[in-house]
Length: 178
Image (cartoon, rainbow, N blue to C red; front, side, top):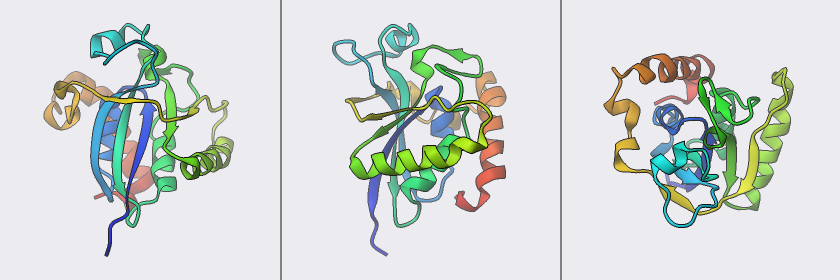
């Protein structure tokens, strides 16, 4: 089968969480943690992002094979493994850097994202606050933020924050997992 490689860029709170989720999904070839959507000059650093003043969001860039998993399925997994109804926060993580955001790469992705947001909204009691915007410049995060969960499974944040997200992924999307 010929691969149809596509890219999605999403932010759903801490990038360690969203990275860990998508590394488990069939058809996902690569997940890179990074930053997008800010207004600070030059390449941002994690320290600048954590200040909440840079305007950047913690995001992941997902390289996936669309002949195995669709962009729509990627978005449904994304929207159901984080809370898209809390503005600028996920759990205890607070600030604009933790906002829920879908950065589309082209008009087709924009249209699919709009459809998914419309279809999924009735499943939530509160209004979805996920930002939908054209992809700005993506900056890869520092090396210590790549594969964070895989390399730090015993760390407290991984146990208390990431593990429940992975449990939710297994419960809701078992058919999409590697």
